[in-house]
Length: 267
Image 1 (cartoon, helix red, strand yellow):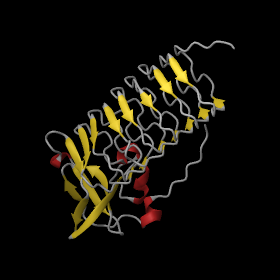
Image 2 (cartoon, helix red, strand yellow; image 1 turned 30 degrees about the vertical axis):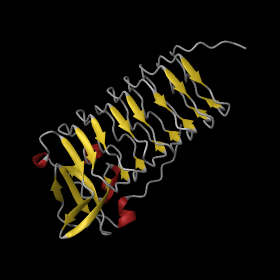
Image 3 (cartoon, one colour; image 1 turned 180 degrees about the vertical axis):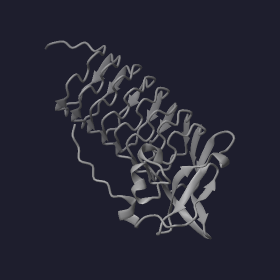
Image 4 (tube, helix red, strand yellow; image 1 turned 90 degrees about the vertical axis):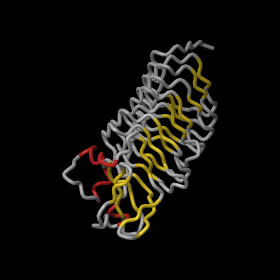
């Protein structure tokens, strides 16, 4: 499925990060924006908690000013940030961080977005706690290849599960989806071999290509009324025994149910 992505860089939104000294706290590196807010821009092994549980603070004092933490940088966001010699995905805040085992947001967190590839290849990251209700955007490939076991997004305002957001999370058994979720983009849960149940919010409209491809523990799916589109290979290689199809469904992609356990009977 072809899409055109339009991304406003942080530079166009905020004019780039100021040349303030960053702050390292509890394994997290923060930096300040001209509007007084700040972002998580990296991780610091030297201050990482012994237990590997990292807490994203509400505010950080930088150069004598308390700054609200509102986001976690992804690789594409670094077009407006000093790359420090990094290129590609490894510019994302926690990319390939093997020491992080748990992520926690402080009570009252104001984080609204998490950038692309931000936690990609954090292969020991098992838990995310206290996800804030202010969160409205999780970018593509954000949690690819982590060890997450369960995730609760039910209190967030996220409306799209973007491309590959939980790609190959083989330990993920359950996820509580946002109540206002509208679309699953390509490969969102591709390869989540332990995912055994998924409850669709009533707001879901489209589930696109390869979203649940290879989810070899997924046996039951109920599609809500209002869902109109299923993409190519969306449930391929899932051991689905039953699927409830809504009357609103008007498009099913190629090989959407290839190698499932569904039995189709002619009427």
